[in-house]
Length: 161
Image (cartoon, rainbow, N blue to C red; front, side, top):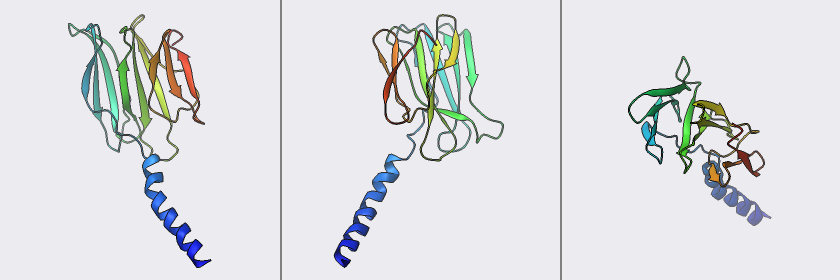
């Protein structure tokens, strides 16, 4: 009986770091410029604020420097905004997509995804339930694949955004 208790305690001790790693937030994107594949638009991401992820601001510029759009995900105190985790352009340069994490460090973590659509020059949140992963992928037919709460992978049409 004592041997099983020691074995169980050892197993819990060994698995604890794995659980902590699985529940930790991924690092957030630092300040950088991300050019569209066609080179006509540049997404300028600025990271500021405090906390593990910081807070982000994004500005969309034409290649000649003309400001198209800006969005600030910061807060007044630098501690309650959102930071960009991952960002990328679709291969056809029509969409710039990025995932955001709130400053709060409570597990399970939830993310949201915003979509910049060049046609119409607008930025909107992706219409999905709670996302548990910051990752996304582009797929055929202007679809974006994300992971919802419960681990389900779903496809969301970007044209509707």
